[in-house]
Length: 470
Image 1 (cartoon, helix red, strand yellow):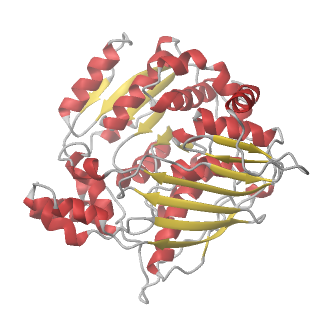
Image 2 (cartoon, rainbow, N blue to C red; image 1 turned 90 degrees about the vertical axis):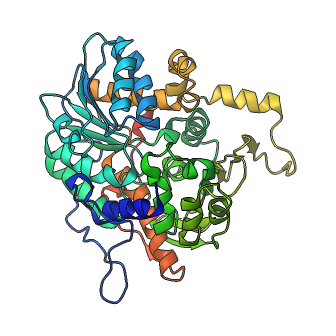
Image 3 (cartoon, helix red, strand yellow; image 1 turned 45 degrees about the horizontal axis):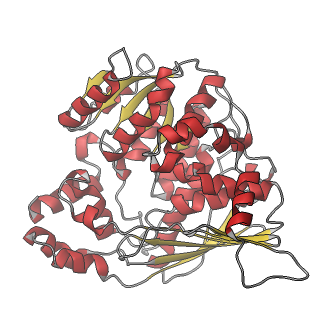
């Protein structure tokens, strides 16, 4: 696009005019004094915690967004369709070639033809949110559409499953919770890293007491995305680059934070209390823009707002601490850190290393050797991961298998009419941390309290549903 077109496109999205959608701006709403407006969480009841909807023997799925992520999720549904657990009944995208590509893929494993919707105006997705068409809407569109689509789906009587983040204003997080509670419809954020083999292994060790009392975790999304942000086609109309031009804070909290909240029983006996967030100066993305071969991208270099590295410190109600980082500008290998500390063990990820505390003769300087590590990995492998080895092996392209496990759990829980592993409160809370990080950065790195998204339901201790067999 020309720079003028890009900025016009950004303005349309930010102002909520694209396709007639009521979209929120990237910039948090503010009061007259410049302080972001807060939301009133007092009406939240927590009624959707461990909520079980009526069983759906075959889940009819409408797919909204058929780009990189949506195409991958279709592949994760193939086995479930073949087993009779699901059927893809609608495919929707603003780009007709993406719809055609998805339809060809579905035809290779499903005999029935889904409804095809490719209205470039951005309104066709509403036709898919119809109880005569689907039971579940899977949302894999650009971030700014997630909340609007999820709320509309629930209002129409459908279950909603959205890619991350599910919202990025406090008001949108609250609206999702209120709508889910009022309609009784599920609203789950599809956080695939909660289903990765390493994270599930650690979660099982925590449950089995290997880590003793968990005290601290470090997690992150460290992923050099500069080439993709600048690519002309990877993100439709380069929508993701726009986020970095308008916002500063942790824009992508959930890959690291989701698993850590599971380790720490957040919303199941503990909660996130407050945070302090700080961003470094910005240098790497603007440098990439200046050095590109595209004059239009070069002209955008001075507009980058998001700092290269954001670090957020979080404290839980029970006194645990979390360090959460975000960096998609800096050249470095991918990492989510996945560090977990307790009185009985410590784990560092990327690469995965385990230390078992054998006091009083502690061996402070050595990780578990390969044999001991492999023994612990086999002994504490999460039963869910272990039971799905065949499907995981067949779906390695789904981020090593975790995408398949995530979609398997979603569909099978709906089939059986049991509570989902993650509730609307999980998605709202993990997304809300991003909102609060931006608020802290904007206000000089001050402490920001995190609202209770569960209406007090977090005080009830309960085992995590991901251990339940379905």
